[in-house]
Length: 606
Ligand SMILES: [Zn+2]
Image: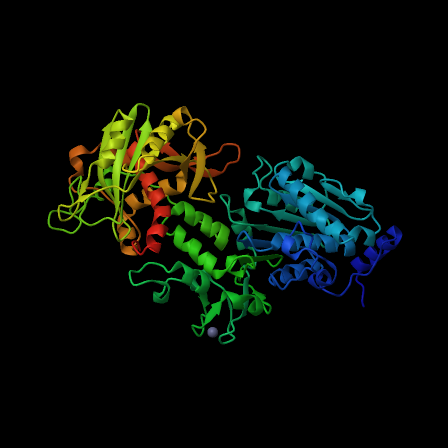
């Protein structure tokens, strides 16, 4: 073995500290596969087993790179669940044992830094008795800083950059880069990181993130090699990357005769199509096939010191092709959900475009003229609905109610609307029929009412109806304004109060924002959606005779609001007048998302 100048210096320093051991020739992942057992806190099912790079073979390249001498940066633009955090913790473990040096792990907040330290990194270290190996005591593991004789590990918060100021760091890891705060006068945390790692000859920065509002990760990714992770597909051996464009789940075989998705089939059989022979790579084959993966640069203009790679959920050991396909189908046409899908599942940036609705946009949603199949007057429907419902919104003393029909194609038809001062009158209107294509009387099968500011009253009135078998039930529903929605519609049992005391009633909660975005797109991008077979909204041909509803549908729109301290722009909503009818429509569309799968099971909806 030959030693360079750096190795000799390290050797001398190492001998003086009494800890020198030559670096092993084996790769970091080979060492980890031989030595590191998985703590229960990391993965309860695999607790006690040796870690293996076979689950996520693409992390091996990062581990090879970090071991090689020289300065550099490695940026990973990724989806949420790819196992890179675990890989980086393993790298830190290896460094502690084999290449002691000052290390930093920066994440968005002090709470996250503590969490990673306590629940993850410290567990890897203690569970694998690494401290004994390097002759350290457990009390060297302080909460946010681990002081060893030759190495220090700093857990850093991107929010409190004062902590970083006077540290020289050899390996700086930047997790969740896109939610790091911007610091006035100091630039991004990436600028600060570069300032911290200047001195050492082998200093390295490893940064990774799911693309977010700042999309800093894409900026860094594009400076680098922009590697693809390619491997030979089993069909013909052609070496290629998995691309989302080649994920197949919407061809004929995945649909029923009516054109609806066979979701079980999508979930089990979605596949990646080989770009060479058209063969199929199924999810169950990907792990074995990926073992031979390699990184291939695609950016001829890359800075030679910067490696970068993009990786998405198709590669993840935790997500199947079918699950990605189902999420894609569910997000289709909804900008808020698509944003989440692109960022968290595809690891790609996603930029929504807002829209201010005009009268003309809503007028364009009216049914056609007499004699055309979409012609209908208020109170009528030109088809037999697969679902007919009534939704009431409560604002101050006013109750606004709409009747909404879903046609067999899945479009939303506003049938009729009414403004009342009394809740009873609004509720009783549910018993007034809608007139069908052949003059038949059609009735709502259930209704919904926004709890608004009078939850107790609404719950009581709803319960009064639900208790009587002969009445059409009306259910309380409320909108929740949350970001990062996990459930679009959820149910809870809530106390009723009043005459019902501590009895409970089923209350639906809906995530406001995704549905508002979908309505905006349904109204503003109607032609595009019609061509793409995505649901749209219809209003009666004679709507102008009472056009308050048109104004109300235009009275709320998304806009980009700038946060002065973080300098980031975020979507927010602006109200320009009463929007209660917009709310009723929102609730109707939301409830359809849970009604539709039920009707589909019964063979009544596509
Ligand atoms: Zn092939």
